[in-house]
Length: 87
Image (cartoon, rainbow, N blue to C red; front, side, top):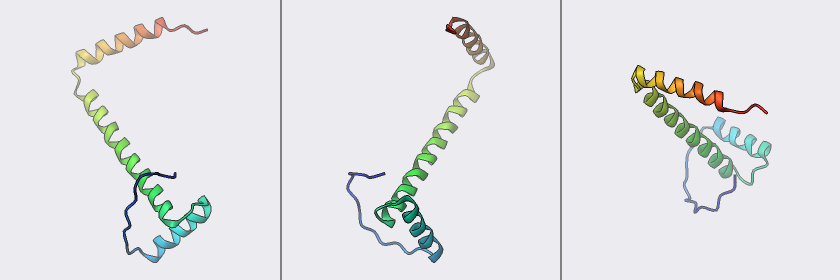
């Protein structure tokens, strides 16, 4: 994924295994650079982490609902299903 955002130059020390992995990924993805591959991997990991946090927050919300609210929501869901047209 190409990005037009400003980039920061950094230097990192990586294991030989990690460097080899990034170089293989660069060839397989036909990426312009190893840095681009690493940036893509980090972005994907960040999205995954944010999605997990959101999922946990949604689960916590629904787990916190009292049984009365859950039962009412189920009734509304059942009612909504009867209103859908199956054409």
